[in-house]
Image (tube, rainbow, N blue to C red):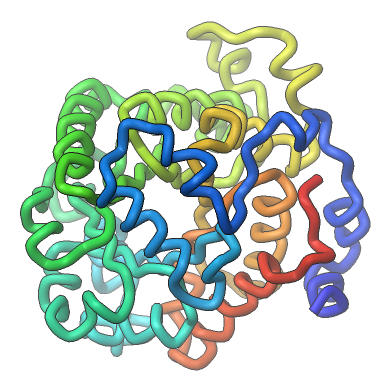
Amino acid sequence: MIDKIQQYLGAEADALLTHKAIVPKETLTLPGPDFVDRVFAGSDRNINVLRNLQLLYNTGRLSGTGYLSILPVDQGLEHSAGASFAPNPIYFDPENIVKLAIEGGCNAVASTLGVLGMVARKYAHKIPFVLKINHNELLTYPNKFDQVMFANINQAWDMGCAAVGATIYFGSEESTRQIQEVSEAFAYAHDLGLTTILWCYTRNNAFKTDKDYHVSADLTGQANHLGVTIGADIIKQKMAENNGGYNAVKFGKTHKKVYSELSTDHPIDLVRYQVMNCYMGKAGLINSGGASGDNDFAEAVKTAVINKRAGGMGLISGRKAFQRPMGEGASLLQTIQDVYLEKEVTIA
């Protein structure tokens, strides 16, 4: 498999596969088969949270590795159903979303109340469900770019979910309310034994100047740190593509060592800084796979290599998989998983 990975990486193979990270891997808590024992057994999470966490880690092709491959399909709300499913209309049917996650060998499927609720009795015992409880939607005009509750924790528990997920737009005008809502929901989820996954997105027009600093390591890193503070067991974050958001936007507080001793411009170091802000890896970092494009397999492999070598816990990839025939989508998910199964792709 390493030869295939190198082929996908092309001219970037050497830079990505041999890079030595600026922050030593020994300072991190890394994924592994005993991750729940090493990290959460000593936490305040109750027994059922530990059981559901372990269920996530013990499902699919990555079972027993400590890595996660999750299929997220909430784009019918977040990006509109037409824009998301017109390229492959079978995914208007919720059952096909779950089938793709199973065929693709995923650890879990994350989706909306409507999607998971429609097929819960048939599939909740076959693959772990992650209920996304809040969403942005694109029908309100003008769009507010807000995350509001579409579901609650009791509904997740009733349908047999292993976890709940939520999004906070850190930096937005609505973020204070979202933090309060999600913090309360996650506390109740833990009471009921459900794992919590937080989509830690930055969102503010001021974050886009000479570059799009919504994907800067320093701003996304702080979003991650806020996310683990309110009890997220797993953090979902867009992969860092640059740095210096604080300095460019000229607000908040940072430190010069963030840019000299704790990170470089190398993508693995940028993502390692994101991992560091997840309590040095004690809350796993899963990066998003990004939008579908012309070079999905190569881009997915590159993203997986960067995440794994940085000390991350896996990928949560949706549009790249479901905007193509099911067989191809399953193959793409499995190609991502192959990176995490390949022992020659090591932690930098």
